Length: 313
Ligand code: UDP
Ligand code: MG
Image (cartoon, rainbow, N blue to C red):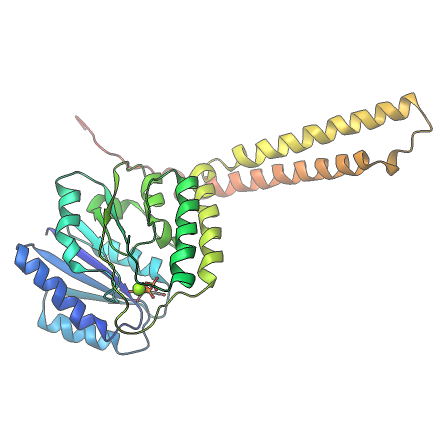
């Protein structure tokens, strides 16, 4: 099978028939072998009934329904697990992404050898203040921290080599950072394609203001887990040592001062409180480091690695 299209959806009953016929038209025009995996993330409208109807009529349309709403990341993750296509394409269900981009995205994966190609909604049809401006800021920060040169990390329209989606786990709200997850999994060819974006035709957006706070917290954890997830002591131990040593030096200074001048009022000095705080903080950081190491060592993924090639085995 050449292409799997994975579509996470929450209450998108009006869009689904139109979206599926459009995708099928593009696939048939190009003669691709394909499947469309619709992941219903706990819709409360008639989305699932629509999916059932569509899948009866077209064998290439498959559906997965969650018991409740788990979030876009979970829906993508589940879709990735079932994807058989050599190239996996993700897109939103609300008709904001155009299926006409599929052939070019596929070509970039198959012919240009990209591991992942992320869409770039260069001209965006969303609310300027609640979406477009915050999104520019979000992308600038993510670009700086992750050192991945993309303009639009969170674009729903993306293409992957099958191997890539099988190597990453998208959890929590990490769908915003899939290119970062892909990079951490060791894939280097990360590309971008300007894609057509359209106004939402039916329904409403599923993401509100809370996504900014959650988004930045997730970026902080993803960078931390990526760098220190398997060696937490290298982070906590470093800062713990710095705090402890500075605290110790200050203590030594205070003790020596007291010896030289018995009148020296120890507990009146800022240095005294600073030393105390630093010593406590230092040991706390060490404890956090040890606890982190214990958790990392007991994690089922402690020895998880991807083998790219083998010879003679
Ligand atoms: N979505 C989902 N689960 C959720 C929220 C959203 O599967 O909990 C889907 C939604 O149905 C759509 C895609 O994720 O297909 C993008 O959501 P939306 O269009 O609301 O986001 P926006 O384009 O406004 O950023
Ligand atoms: Mg949308």
